[in-house]
Length: 441
Image (tube, rainbow, N blue to C red):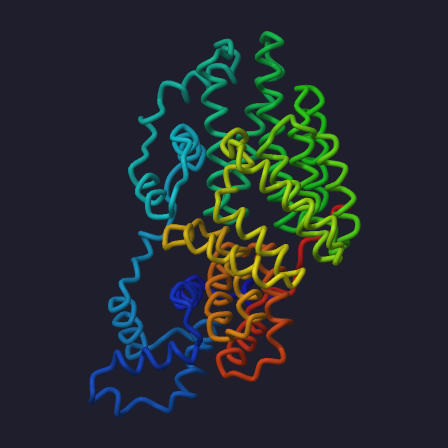
């Protein structure tokens, strides 16, 4: 059984607060020493002993006593760490998703927390009540009801960048069940098609969540639903999106991912430029991993051209592909091909768009790719700093894609003798979950 399975909530909180600050356990020990007054500091054990205590606290072996509890409190206060209530997403997730989707704009973490705290059931009473009546058969689904569900779908895709799969998945399943129930009611064929598209847009996300949670059977079922609704709604972009997600689910079979993505790009054609740009960039990433230079470079150059003209908000699944995230895909390609000048240019582009308000899941990947590139140009300190940022975000969401990218970073860091690299490798090894998502194909 993994450590995560038995660790109490207070232990998780201690670890997560430290990771949000990108500190090693040794740095945490130093900060505890600094937080103590002179008299208390003189009674503290050696730093190595304090590190051992921190390990006990974070593993849940024993709870901090009064002394350590006070030192932690002082450190959090000095660093401006928010209280537990400020880091949670309270309330009805479906209502929050509707609100976020209705705004239909990029949502940073702080704004999302404020929105969640202020969103109440009365805020969406009218469309929610009409939806309930439609589901009970007392009201025929109309444009207001379907528009409500469309906004909710967009919102669920946006929330995916901030919340763990396990938190969102139950709400998404409820949403998908409601869409499916309305499809069985007496509605026009036009409305049925709109709902089919909604079901497909929701099913691709459900398949992704199930895969992240290690549920191969459920992931496969939602994948089939996505493809069926793509056919029913005459919407090839849904099928292309599902293939794009599948390219991450091959269990490391890069050649298979390349073939799948090539087929998806061909089948999609020009139906949706944003989806095409993402698929081309994914193809470039996987081809670069195979050292298929020509395929990778042609794909990323075409992706850049398409992306420059695309509307990333056109479909729910492409809203994540902002300029910073797209630049990180270019960085992956050029870093894998050891094209240093292009990699540096991509990092400069990322720097223009990355900040404290960057979505958590985005940091899992972007910072890991930056760590690899920085290490390859010889900057170990910056590489470890970027890796720690990715590590913090990945632990927070337990994101499989983040663990996969960080595995690559740790492998590359193995020859590094710098203390910061050794500390990071040791901490990563003690935290990395043993399980990995299953291959779906």
